[in-house]
Length: 159
Image 1 (tube, rainbow, N blue to C red):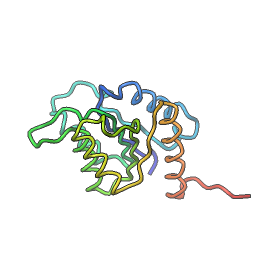
Image 2: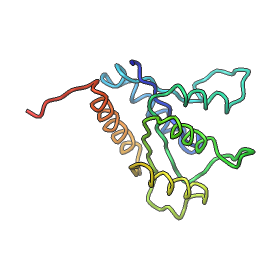
Image 3: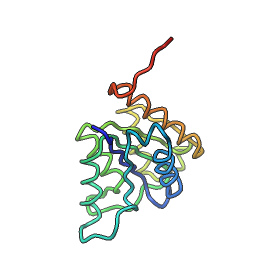
């Protein structure tokens, strides 16, 4: 099962720095790089396929979905959904392991569709709020260690 594929989902423009820092952090960490492979859409080369086909295919192939939800909802397609919401919906439908991180605590400042998405998510799973990149990196790291323990890929003793 190694490498375990992580799909990072967010509005790219809003989280450009955090996405890159998270990928670099996980790939640079001695423990994490032994287990995980990170997918970022922006790392793909130009290809002759529609973007939604590509990112949804990557969600299908991932083991862990990491959603970064902020204040912007993102571009809306013909179905009235953003790529981030489509990715989350597919990860949910396919029973992917989902980790959700919500930037900030002022939900009223969020785009209305993002407020609704955050509200729906927190009814389904435990999400974590963050304000800084350091909080995000620490939160994701801790959650991935728990994932490895849960999957019995990493063991520890209480002793």
